Amino acid sequence: MLVFKSKLTREFLLFSIYHAQSGHPGGSLSVADILTYLYFEEMNIKSPAVPDSDRFILSKGHVYWNFNILICFRSVECLLGN
Image (tube, rainbow, N blue to C red):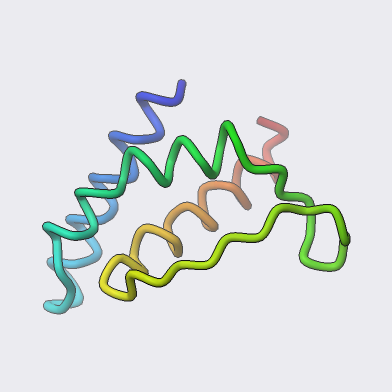
């Protein structure tokens, strides 16, 4: 399932960057697998209001597309129950 999520992340990245006519596909694609793994397997993300939730600081601004897409996937996953 993680491989599917990673491929879907890369698809959405390319789609989003192309249609926005803005962004850096190389940087975004270079961290897609790493961020997908962290966000879905390693990090304990409950809610920003929960003190023991993991926090993620993205300091590589050119890859903000990844973070937005992963937040969207995670929200849909939570809504659908998996």
